Image 1: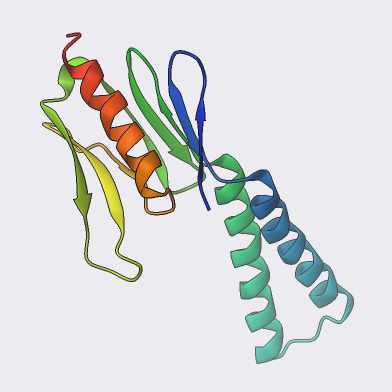
Image 2: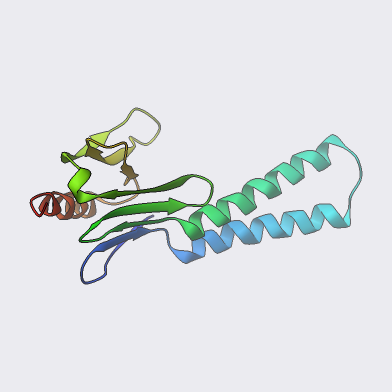
Length: 140
């Protein structure tokens, strides 16, 4: 569901805007419903937790951006990722599968602790990200 965009001098990986809006809408609607029918019950707390997860998910999907630029790579997502790396710090770039549901795939920058989750990109887009990153290593 992620999208890969070419910015002219780099690449940007992000989720479509509508996904974040969908989660935010769900969280806001559920929170409003709970507030209008508020009673101290276990069901209320479960609904509030679901609303909180919806709001957090919306903020995450709206804010997720991984940027690969000529000078380095940056990734940010609300309360999840925040990091940057200069290409001069990177010893190598590999596409690494990880154990887990859906066969998670990460672009890992060797020599640093920087990685980008590219599970939701198709294989051609993953290869584009890998090729772009590897091409920058020679420009130290």
